[in-house]
Image 1 (cartoon, helix red, strand yellow):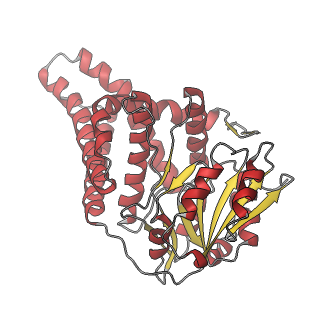
Image 2 (image 1 turned 90 degrees about the vertical axis):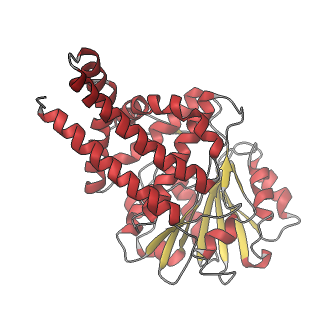
Image 3 (image 1 turned 60 degrees about the horizontal axis):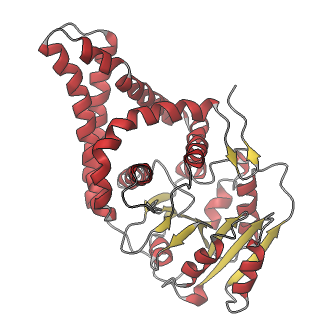
Length: 382
């Protein structure tokens, strides 16, 4: 069988991809919580909220149920120019809970994207040595704060947590696709943390030392990007000598719901994919090769399988697909085991076939398409 240059790229890339995922799976399987600090730090929990009257009360209730000592943390809700009852709801909880602080942002910043500006205002007013962030539409489990803080050893500057997207409709393919995608990203984050190279993070469950935030210049270097208060900040911390850990354990997740419509899901994924423009050089090269590989899996490889005249040709291209599926399934199985999300794997066969198309579409759309966050519209890449 004669191979062309692209065939050689495919077999080399899928082999490297499988080796990396196999190593990640093993590292993730044996990765353990550190349990460094126990209730030694005063903590500021930060929640930026914009028109979140539907969710903010539930979020506060879950934060008040945390097992972390009540006198050792404050809850700072930053009301970012809400036009609904967000502020009034927060004030109603303040009456009986002195730990809750409400900060109101009345004007947008000309120099910083809205959410980063809101978080920055909250950080400047915070009293904690450790800052723990979540979103208004999240429901942190009772051990979330204790587990996140316990990962802060002497040299740990940032801790990434898992924020699963839980399907509301148990057998919805759409919602389970989103949930499984969220599990995959969390598995990559946790697995890469096992090797000291955390690759991704979510602002729904993220913690960092205030002095580390100040050391990297806060959000100043990423101020204008609508998204990226998580991944891009992670990238800045990775350039320092501080360690980054992943938080695992019982009842340590910040649960959220899937987008309520396909349109909102599309907007969310474009916003998340748009961060790829601003990653470091090595990450951009890696993601670009991964993107080309996925495009080939829905174009070049299927065509080659269909037109193959011999079993050897057919089996070669089928093998490329098989290696990818097996490598993905291995990491997803370890992720389902570590995060106790076995049910998601029921939908893996369907989702595995759709995933290359999903990557291909949203990878390009994130670079060139517009997206909206609240009332802020992004500028597409030109």
